[in-house]
Length: 253
Ligand SMILES: NC(=O)c1ccc[n+]([C@@H]2O[C@H](COP(=O)([O-])OP(=O)(O)OC[C@H]3O[C@@H](n4cnc5c(N)ncnc54)[C@H](OP(=O)(O)O)[C@@H]3O)[C@@H](O)[C@H]2O)c1
Image (cartoon, rainbow, N blue to C red; front, side, top):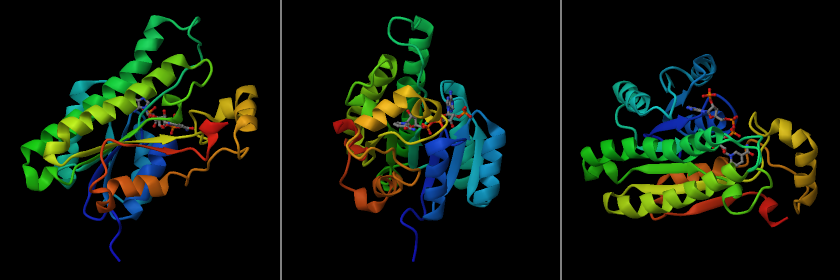
């Protein structure tokens, strides 16, 4: 049986670790050609080796740099053709609260978690629209937001704000690009142990968060697979502008 995303050319940003790496593995296993992007090229090369070079391409890219984003799509097109699926996953958080944080760090968070999400989506949309309706109607953009965009996680104000912006950016782009058939959705995870969260989850803050969550647990790396595949597949043809929350009820704690 063909995979659920067979024939798709999928770009995953932030694929050198954590959720992005998992998303690339899942999309490849379901038949997509995948372009994995991040700054740490050695890690991407390991992923290409694991998935296989005929189905996976590594592109070193800092997604906050517009020229590198354009070059990333050029490289992807040269190897696999038009990118029709984008997982806008690269993101970061911070240790400073709103009083101790300086303006440079606040801007850095917004630049990566919001501006680069728009920039990466815009480049995909430009190319899909230029390629005409028979191509653009397959367009799928999935922006990785967070339950932090819906609730307040204490002491990460910049992060919370950026993820709320990411969700509303998603709705705005979905509205603008509906006429081209490009679907834009957000996927909002609860806590999953990754490099981003591991230290915090193992500390006092994490223990409190887990203690408060209704099921007293964090999610494992497989927890987002099905939601991701749904949003990227033909099954989501009529789904656009949504924010799918997959958080095991953590945000209700
Ligand atoms: N883990 C969770 O509990 C959780 C919950 C909700 C939402 N999320 C969201 O899920 C996404 C992935 O997080 P994660 O937990 O998997 O964290 P992670 O393991 O730290 O991964 C973050 C990824 O982003 C990449 N990245 C950072 N800055 C970049 C830049 N300027 N250009 C290109 N890539 C960049 C990193 O790669 P390089 O350093 O190699 O560039 C890395 O691959 C983030 O958007 C995060 O906010 C995570």
